[in-house]
Amino acid sequence: MTVSATHAAVAAIASIDRETARLRRLLNHRETFLSGIDRAALTTAENARIAEREAALSLELRLREIEGDALLWRLFHDGME
Image (cartoon, rainbow, N blue to C red; front, top):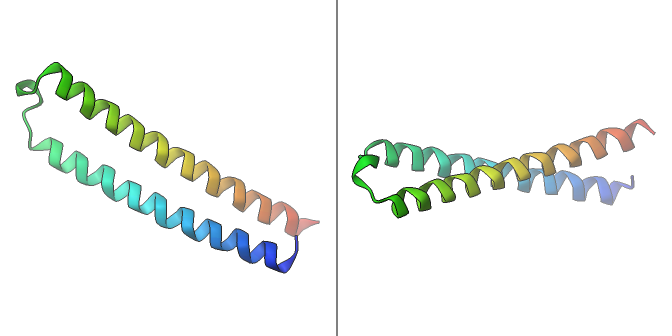
């Protein structure tokens, strides 16, 4: 891996780390907010939308973590060659 490619990968990892931190904060904020709501008082549709959004955020977070892991592995693997 060239120096510029290594720098690009490190920058991408830093960007992914910032994005995963943002997603974690967003999920934690939602959990805190939702803990104060009586979910039984919400309609089925409202609960479904909440669950759908939480699932989407969790999936996006996991995808970013996988993307970061893949870049780290690439840096490690290319550095070993």
